[in-house]
Image 1 (spheres, rainbow, N blue to C red):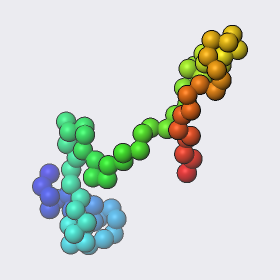
Image 2: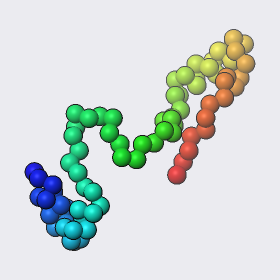
Image 3: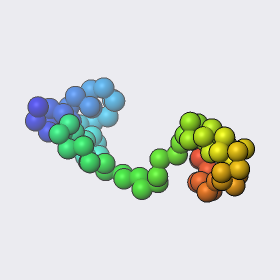
Image 4: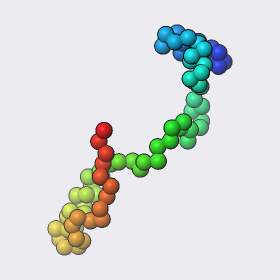
Length: 78
């Protein structure tokens, strides 16, 4: 697929003109390039490891480590 064909296809779907689509810079992503991100996000992944938390609570209850264990970054809910 050429860039012109891509611009026309996106224009047909969105209702924009091919010229507008061309200015917006649509490109075909290469699945072999896994590190490509036009808007990189350096925020570390936000998650809670329930198994690790349960293990830390169990060890804390036995007196092995103080509770809470090392503080973690709070999850961000948008």
